[in-house]
Image 1 (cartoon, rainbow, N blue to C red):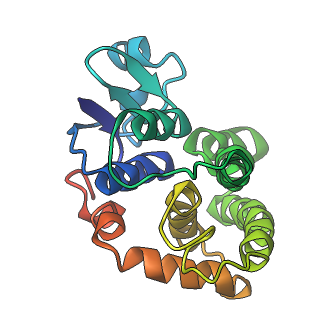
Image 2: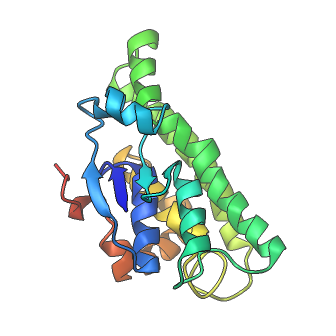
Length: 212
């Protein structure tokens, strides 16, 4: 398998965590987003959106981190990334989708470039935009995580799952954009537990071969 990503991409970060939890090591192919490599014709043939990540399984090319991670969970043994119970699975997916669908798109590089180019915003304005929307989304995640009564160290239990895989990269992005995360004590505790695990630690952007 070949995995096309970028060290600082939140979506690629999620996939790296999932690969590690499953004990899967695809060949990594860097796509430099800052240099615009995602817009190259060859890459767009794999993913017409021109976004990372993309997983080439040898039999198929899969885009979108959620699709990649769910395919991985359905086709590989190891740590289950989603619970067996349908309602628990739905709650796990809903938490992940708050991040994937409602927070992450508003901090995506192409959106931030558009805000700068077409709305006259300097970096300070862009950072303020990100802080607002990341904060709004994490506020909901904090409420959901805090309402759980399972007593485990992770969002939905005693082992990391899809929710934690999405949470940790989003908290990293919150730091990048200067958001004060003190208002999210439960999320910070979960993050600390996750980042102490080698599967999460080795997926960190700073430990990737294309990190700059």
